[in-house]
Structure formats: C-alpha cells, structure tokens
Length: 102
Image (cartoon, rainbow, N blue to C red; front, side, top):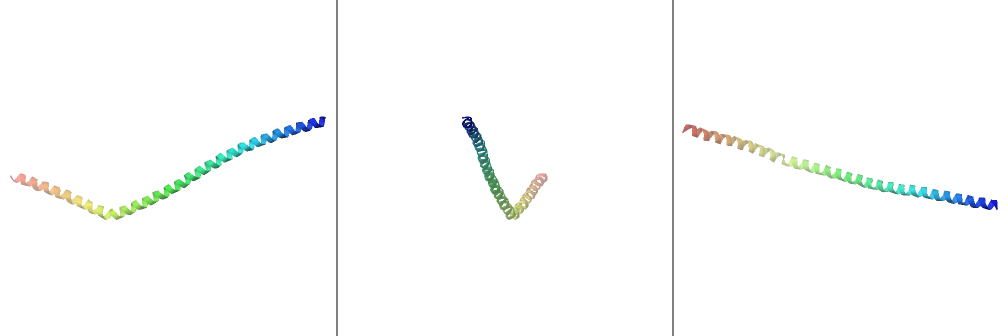
C-alpha cells in the first residue's frame, strides 16, 4: 500500500512538473511569436526606408537634370534683367536731364 501511495504521489508530482514545463514553454512560444512579429514589422519598415531612399535619389537626379537643362535659360534671364535695369536707369537719367534743360 505504501508503494502504491508513493507511485501516486510521484505521478502527481510528475504531472505537476509537466504542467509547469508546458506553461513555461507556452510563455516562451508567445514571447517568440511576438518577437518574430516585431522583427517582421521592423524588416518591413527597413524595406520602406530603402524604397524611400531610392525615390529620394531619383528625385535628386531628376532635379539636377532640370537645373542643368535650365541653366543657360536662367543665365539669359539674369542678363536680360540686368539690361532692363540699365535701360530703366538710362530712361530716368534722360527724363531727369530733359527736366533740367527746361
């Protein structure tokens, strides 16, 4: 009878230990699942950041091409603007000198 009680007690102890192991491993499994989910989100974010960097490089390249193409036109406009300013000054001096002569 003592042997039977000891076997029952050992069985209950083993069953309790097994439940504890299952619980601990379940928590580890949940934690690992959360970690994998976070890593997946981080990887997705990294992919999006790489795509953004690529797009920014493309935009910069396109902007440089536009600046290069418009450089000559911009220089001509600056020259025209300087010419207009000189003509305005000349007109003012001519108008002023005509008033002075009167």
